[in-house]
Length: 123
Image 1 (cartoon, one colour):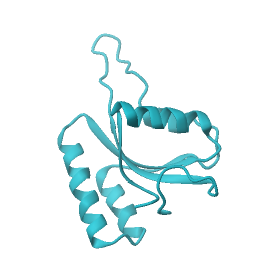
Image 2 (cartoon, rainbow, N blue to C red):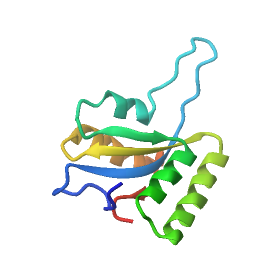
Image 3 (cartoon, helix red, strand yellow):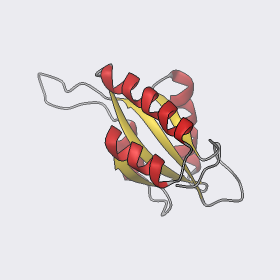
């Protein structure tokens, strides 16, 4: 994983370890509202994709990126915090610099507290 903060204009994508709120399944019809990863999966941008889903995978990606022990420990504490709340899932994603619509949605969801950035390319 490249380590840089937010969206950088001289890169084709930005990487994030995120916690995102999961949506409940309707007990009546069996459907649920769109989750953030559904939007990532639906993106047509070649550099937008899901690297991994789950806390253990996110920690592996963090260690693989040669993060410092302190950064890994901080990420681990935050990952545990959100996983233990029950309504959050963890994912490691890349968002293309050219995927303007998803970048906008992502930034909006972060502002609303529906997505939390645990680590990004600048940490």
